[in-house]
Amino acid sequence: MFRRREPVPFAFLAEADRFRSNVTPPPPERSSWREIAGRWLLGLTIVAALVGSLVVGMPALSLDHSAQTQESQASQGR
Image (cartoon, rainbow, N blue to C red):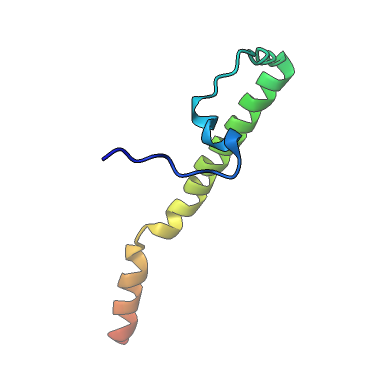
């Protein structure tokens, strides 16, 4: 009915789930204004690169209707 816990070779592993530390971690260091500015600059650079690649790539993605009319005129022998 009641099962005993299986023995574990290392006792500290068996009690690790119940362990709580009373030591508080140090507060995180505040970022300097240079680090914040660098992160903003990096973010803006990435966004500008994505927008620029989209602007440069849009003509290649659009259909060129003038090329289709030139092919039809050439096939008619004009």
